[in-house]
Amino acid sequence: MILLVTPSERASECAAALREAAGEGIVVAESLARAATLLRAESYLAVVLDQYLVETEPHEAENTLEHLGTSILVPVNLAISGMERLVREVRAALQRRQREELRARQAAIVRLHSELNGTITALLLSSELALETAGLPAAAAEKLRAVHELVKKLRGQLEGAGPPEGPEPVCSPRALPEVMPM
Image (cartoon, rainbow, N blue to C red; front, top):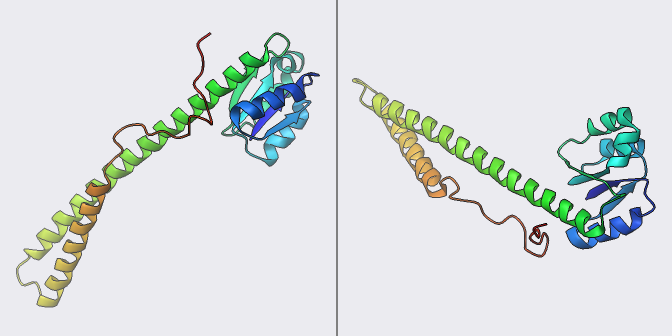
C-alpha cells in the first residue's frame, strides 16, 4: 500500500495514476497530521510526500517523517510535476526498495550460512576428538557417533542449500515496469 500525502486538488488524479502504475492500494492523507496518524496505525510500502507540506509545515513534517518505519520516502513537488514524472519517481523508488531488500536478504543468508558452517565444523571436530578419547564407554561412543553422523548430515544439507548465487527477480515485470530515462 502507498500513502500519498498532499492537500492538492489533484490528489485523486495522482492516486488513480499511482494505483494503475504500481498495482498497489493508495491511501490519501490531506495533511501531515493525518499522515502521521496513518503511519502509526499501518505500514506502507512508500510514502509519497508533497514538498509543499514540508516547506509550509516543517515541524509537522519532521514529526511525520519519524513515523516512516520501513516505508520508502518519495518527495515530489506536485505543483510542477506531471503524472508521468510522479509515476516514474514512484516506480523508481519501489524498484530501488526491492533491490535493497534483496541485497539485505542475500547478505543475511550469506552471513547465517557462514556462521552455521563454522559451528558445524566445530561440532564435527569436537565429536571426532571425543571419539578418540581413551577408555570411552561403548554406549557413549555410540551416541557420539550418532551425533557425528547427524552433524555430517546437517553439513550436507547446508552445502546443498548454499548461499545465494546472484540476484533473483523479486517482482513480475508487469508489477513494476522499467523506468524510462528522462
